Structures are given as C-alpha cells and as structure tokens.
Length: 140
Image 1 (cartoon, rainbow, N blue to C red):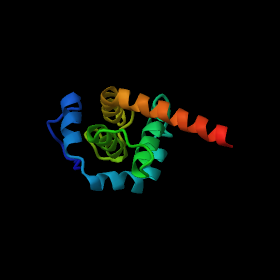
Image 2 (image 1 turned 30 degrees about the vertical axis):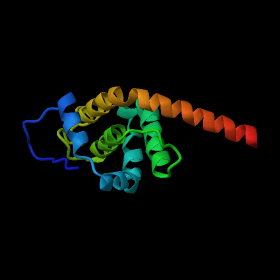
Image 3 (image 1 turned 90 degrees about the vertical axis):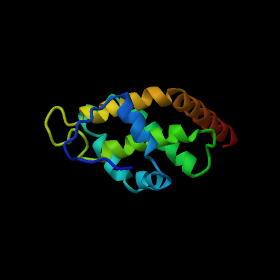
Image 4 (image 1 turned 180 degrees about the vertical axis):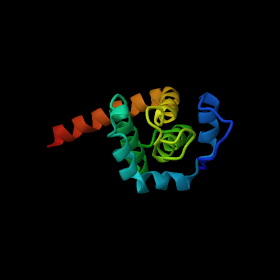
C-alpha cells in the first residue's frame, strides 16, 4: 500500500478509502504488526480517546486472524482494517499529523469510513471473542 505525503488533489472520502483498500497486500498485513508500537503510541493522543477501544479491538481482530484463531473474515474486511492502521500510523498522509488541530482529522475520517464498512464483521468478531473468553473461564 502506498500513501504519499506529497500534495495531491485527493480528499479523504469514501472513494479514497475504497481505492486504498484495493491496494492492500499480504505484505501490508505483516507491516501492521511490525508497526504496532507506532499505532498504540498514536492512539494514546487525546484526539483518539473516543475511538481507542475500537482500534484496539480491530488490532486484536487482525492478531486473531493472523494466529488462525478467527477464520470467518472476508479479505475485504481485513484489507480495510490493514489500510486503516497503515494510514493512521503514517505521519505524512494527506494532512500531516504534526499540523496542530487538523493533523488527525483525515486519520479519524478514514477510520470512520472503514468502521462503517466493517461494523458487522467487527461485531461478529466481538461476539466470538466474548464466547471464547466465556469458554476459557468455564474451563478454568
């Protein structure tokens, strides 16, 4: 996946997100885990407070898919999550993060669009995860 910090005529909208999802590869899946520290450092910023739990859930979703614990996920959903994480951690995206007050707006917008696209799969995963936790507790 390529995200450039160069000035562009692109704007962050649903089409931008869908086009970005189409560029995601298996290599990007690994990159998400290599850069997890950057993701968690970024979402500790106050601008992310409202979305932090969803991003952590999304990352756990990707982790469970990678470990082959959760297998009910279409590639498009995985690609959407991967695109989102890579976009969020890129400091030089369409609106560079170092610009005060607006630096995270594009990141939050991308996250919002992706959340709408994957909400049903994320809810299914969350239900599965609760079931797994319940099973583990009953076995203990």
